[in-house]
Length: 100
Image 1 (spheres, helix red, strand yellow):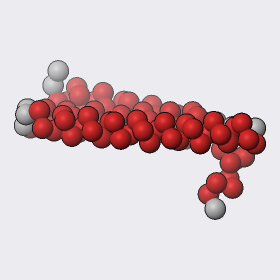
Image 2 (cartoon, one colour):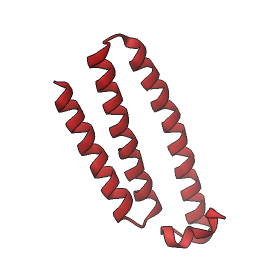
Image 3 (cartoon, helix red, strand yellow):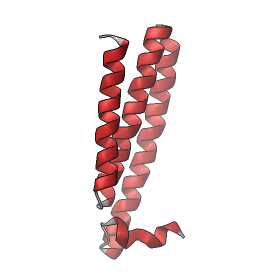
């Protein structure tokens, strides 16, 4: 797989995530779109690291970033679940008081 193909795949994943984050109003779907966008960025970074310097140091750093992102998204899903249980609010318009 070439660098161009890797970057094209990363751009496609990022684009699908961007469309999902913008077009949806359900909190969980917006978070899934954001997750896809971050995964596209990580894939592009991993591709650059692999084709520029194929040492495993860059990939280890990306694994640490993926682990931190997984914890962040788990906390986000926990907040969305709590919001749905407490207020029956699953749409982003219903959760505007979280921004204050």
